Image 1 (cartoon, rainbow, N blue to C red):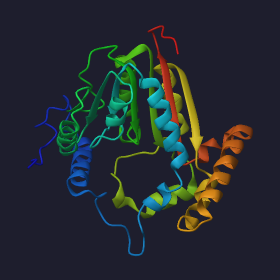
Image 2: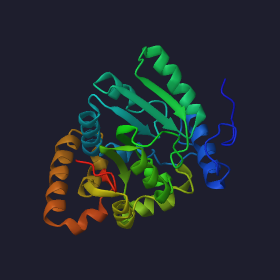
Image 3: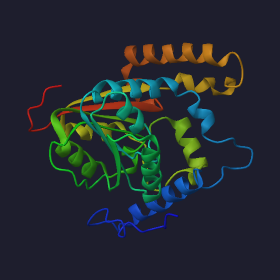
Image 4: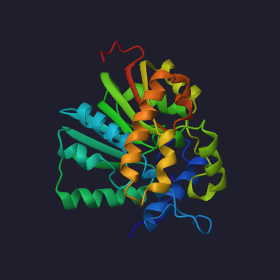
Length: 278
C-alpha cells in the first residue's frame, strides 16, 4: 500500500515544500488513490465528462502528432499519471519512454502496469516538472496533456528548452482561459480542480517564444461546445463533425477568435541557442 508521502519525502526539488506543490501533490494523490477528481460536483451535475465528449478532435490531433514525432526516439511524458499515452508510445515506435508525475501514488500504479505489460522500454519516475533531473539534450520529444497549466511556466519552459534535443519537439494539449462561458463554469465548480491551476492565456503562449524559436498553436472547440446536450442522441456525432469543421474554418478565417477556444495543442521546437532544425 502506498503511503501518502510529502513532496520532500520523494525528493522532488530544492523548493519542494512550496505550498503550491504540496496542494498539487495532495489533490492528485487523492485523485489517483480513489479514482476520482476529488470533491463532488453540485447536486444535479453529471461531471466534466459531458464536456469531454466533444473533445475527440483535439485529443486525436494531439495523439497523432506525438505518435508521429516519437518514432525511433526518446520521449518524456509530463504529468503521465497512471500511464496516459506512455504505454502506447512505447508500443508503437518510441525507442524509450520516460513518464514523470508529481504524484507518487500515480507513479506506483504506472510502474505496476508497466510490469504487468512487460514493456521494457517504458519507465516512470516521481519528479517535479519544474526541476527535471535529466541531462541537457536528453529527449527527442517531450509531451503532456493538461499539465502546463498547473506549472510555473517560466521554470517549465526553461526545463523544456534545456532537456529537449536541438531538433526535438515539445507537444502539449492544454485548456485556454479566455472563453467567458467556460470560465463561468470553472468558477462554479472550483472543487474539481486544484486552486493553483491556470488555463493558458495567449500571453502564456507568447512567453514560450523566449525559449523556442518556433511556437505553433492549433485551437479546438468553440462552436462544438454547443453540441454536448446532444451527446446521448443520434444527432450528436453528425452535429459534432459539423461544428468541428465550422470551428476549423472560423479559426482559419478569423484567427483572433482562437482565444475563445476551449483547448489548444502547442508545438514548441528549435530551443533558443541550440540551432535546432524543425
